[in-house]
Image 1 (cartoon, helix red, strand yellow):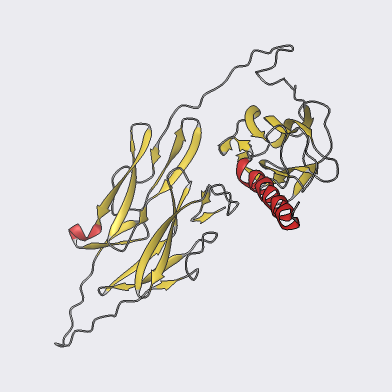
Image 2 (tube, helix red, strand yellow; image 1 turned 135 degrees about the vertical axis):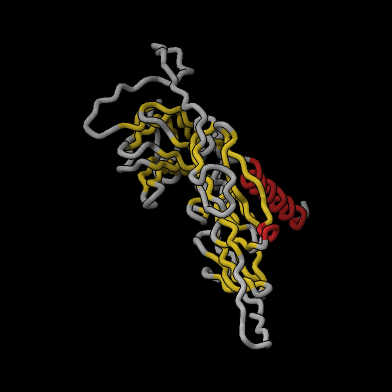
Length: 323
């Protein structure tokens, strides 16, 4: 056989294998959740069997304040080379496991109430993988009774699920364009919080309640000879001078975080058409999207970014930044 053909054939096979591992397999996991005290059904699962060179993360799962997390899971990994991580999301510290758990067990990571999972595999030897079923949010000093997942046929247990009703509270009492307000509450069991914000120095996004549901509307502050500043329409002021000389402030723009910086709260400020503006980065749409403000020369601009993004290893928007 021609050596060149033989070598080329090996290269093609290796390329196909690598492409299959990188493109074809990933982990599956539940959306980011605010959990309840007690048992919570959560999913984080590798393919069975998993493949080489995997590195995947879950979303963040938040236990109530004052509680800690235990994880109900099964793992069967190449010992010493492939790992199952449970991160303390706030500090970045983690506890990790390798080898096999010999069935479903309760894992107690180092103290944490905000959990994020990760799985890594090396370049060779694969096994069954990981399957996370539940997170128990418990208080220290209390005794908790473990139950099998609801799909188990061994000693089935009847559980009662409490659903949080939809609620909506508006701090400024409704469609109040001259006051910066906050709309918060629960929707479909998940907590939300939306703060009024300026899309530009002339345009306001105002949040309000429609019964027990949040809603938002865009309003042009220039309609009433006002401009938008810090999430509210501000009445423009006029200055009378004793001379006939009119001084126009040139357009300007200054960005406190230096550009499109997704992981830091910033604001742009300056003058546009002689009017001062100050616009702050803001979270939108159930805290999944970031509206990042930046300067284009002397003009303010904004950019929308989905914080639920594996490439940036962020899961949500908090206080005007992806975390």
